[in-house]
Every structure is written in C-alpha cells, then in structure tokens.
Length: 321
Image (spheres, rainbow, N blue to C red):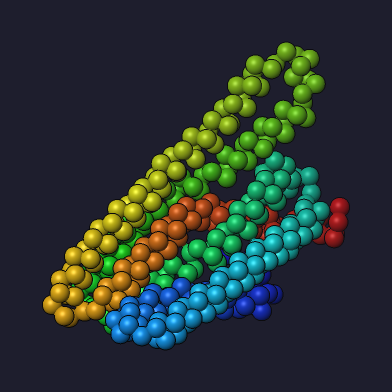
C-alpha cells in the first residue's frame, strides 16, 4: 500500500481531477431519471409542448455533460494507471540493479520477471477498474436511496432490502474466493520459472532425450494455474445471475406497489418510473462492481509482491552492480 500512497502524494492533481470527473459523471447519471419523472408528471400530464421541449433540452444537456465527464474520467484514470506503471517499473529496475546474486536467487529470476510484468499489470488494471466501476457504485447506491426516500418510503424499502441482501451475498462470495485468488500469482511464478528453465536448457533436454518429462512438468504448472482460476470463476459466477434475479424481483415489486399507490392517488406515474430507474441503476452498478471485485484480492497480492522487492534489504549498497 505504501507504493499507492507515494504515488497519490506525487500525483495529487491527477487524482483530484479524476475524482471530480467521476463525481460529475455520477451527477449526470442520477440527473436523467429525475428529469424523466418531471417530464412525465409535469410536461406530458399538462400537454404543453413548450414544457416538454424545455425538459427535453435539459435532459439532453445533462446527458451530454455526463458523457463528457465519463470520457474525461476514463482518460484520466487510464493516464493515472499508465503513470503508475511507468514510475513503479522505473523504481523496480533501479532496485533490481542493486540486488546481489544471492538476492536474485532468493526471489528467483522467474519471480522477479513476473513481478515486474504481470504483477504491475494487475495493479494498473485495478486502478482503472476501481476508478471506473468500483468507486461510483457505493456513491450511486447512497444517493439513489436518498432520492427514492423523497418519493416513496415503501418503494425505497423494496430496493434497500434487495441491495443489502445482494451486498451480503457478494461479501460471502468474496470471503470464499479471496484466499483462492491470493494463490494465483505464485502459480504464475511457477509457469514463468518452468518456461524459462525449459527454453534455457532446451539443448540439454534434447541431448538427454528428456522431452516427455519436461512436457509433463510444464503441463502440470499450466494445469495448476488453470484449475485455480476455474475454482475462483466458479465462485464468482453467481454474482451476475443473482443480480439479474434481484432486478426482476425489484422491477415487479415496484410496479405492483407503485401501481397501487398511483391508483390511490398517493403517487404520480413519473415518480414510479424514476424509482424503477434508480433501482435498476443501483443494482447494475453494484453488479459491475462485484464482478470487478474478483480481481481485487489478486491485485493486492501483486501489490505486496512488488513492495517486497522494493523494500528488500540489499547486501551491496552501491547504486549499481
């Protein structure tokens, strides 16, 4: 975590700009359903074309600004990810030059190579996905619940109970899948080491007719990695179908209770439409965040592996070997 902390301290402006763009994107996303409700209840109900056009222009403006903010947030988060990769690999390379042969053998050359390539890539991917898919989810969830409370307490409870249940399911899946995710990178190390040994010693392998043994050893490292990934994916495969099931239940429940409230004159049709859209937005963002959370344990494991090298004590104190 010290690497991320140092990176954020050195790139405060970029981090702040990314956060502001994400907030504007969220504001645009939440503003459209509210304007839809206003369009139905005020514009269409009154039948005044001028009111409908005015609200329509407002919707287009909000959607356009939200789109611009989304593009900007994607650009800045990608820039932050690329800058993190560049700065981290530069530090890693300088640290690698200071390592003695004993230090290199302690970590193994295959592991050092994996940490500089695959592990840094994992953390870069985590930065982008966190900014674009994980960070907006809780913010949208909180604000949609608050905005629904303004419309109808009953309809809000339908969504709130479903959201809490879904978060609990995701937590249980994360608890089961996280330990398996942490063991993926060492298996990737084993693949890198095995392939490196194979290509380095290919002449000796052919000379002693040892191809069958090396093939079995290589296939075993591939199979171990594949089996671990299959176990992780089987656990997190439940995330999407459960989310769609809850979406269907919420949609039907809101239309049922909302229809009764509209018939009683307690609610307007536009409000029911807005509540449905807010509910779908909430679960959609939570579903996307849950799908991305699969990589978080693996990314943090990669982060710890990178820090292990950067914080390693060296035997030779000179700048280079």
